[in-house]
Image 1 (cartoon, helix red, strand yellow):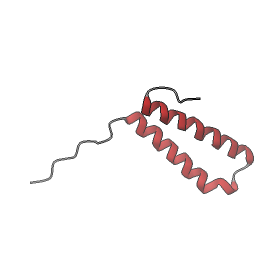
Image 2: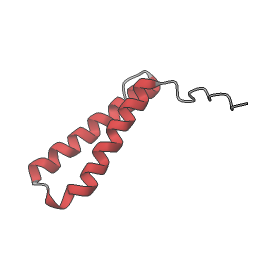
Image 3: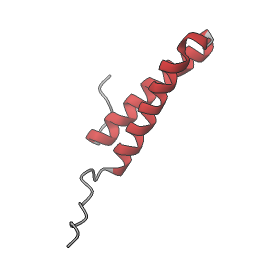
Length: 66
């Protein structure tokens, strides 16, 4: 008898998606930071902040505190 398939534990798909985006972006920055121009680094930081806000919104359902 084969084992039962496990149910998906993580049900908040939007949160998973935005967390994946955040991790991918952070890994890309970590790999390329020394070769990035100041403008690229500035944009990368802005995108990190935007993605962090998106994670907060997906996790809590409300905008992040200011």
